[in-house]
Length: 284
Image 1 (cartoon, rainbow, N blue to C red):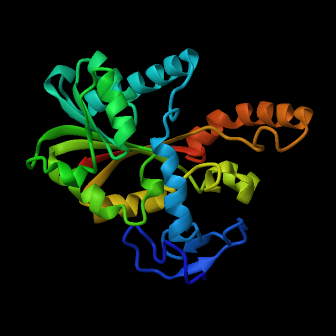
Image 2: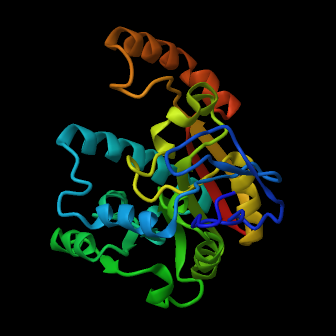
């Protein structure tokens, strides 16, 4: 194991030792928790923070119109599930999106009737969200000092894979949620058919391509983290499969792989083996 790795132990509260895997990356092989299967980057702290700077870049997270419509559709499905789990109308529910970037989900939630706000650590991006009229606060969640039981729902979209120690954040989410409140987490699934097929070729593992990615979950490790933070798992969904990254293979091979992956999307979802993972947790 590299002694200068930024992450040195399983971050979900599992006490099992780490083992080296065959997933070879430029910074060193991924390591796996022998208890829950969590995969961990070997990247050093300096390089980690360098890649995190991309999240405050002026052009960060400004998708074209068609992508915004896709995101709105995805958000509406998630918001519908949150409302169903809470058992009350969106207008009666207060929601906070943590690590909200430019506040797109905050805006979608507001359109759906939720009392929505966001917290974003990248100062320039948080300011850009406020310029759009969104209720987005700068800084880390723990620095906002919300009162206990302030929210009915909270969301962490593509956040936990960036954290060396995610448990303190989840415990803070539990504190600010009302009893029975819902926490929604999205991240990659390291136990997916995509990883089985692509291994270290999966872009999600590469910190040069996905800044700050150091910790890779699976449904089991997600459940361990939830339990250790005081949540119970309501449901875990996964979606999508792929065999190649675009540009890594000949166009014909890529197209054939894409067709095969589309045929496996439904089986992967049913088997919990898609590479996009969505966990609905409830404050226990």
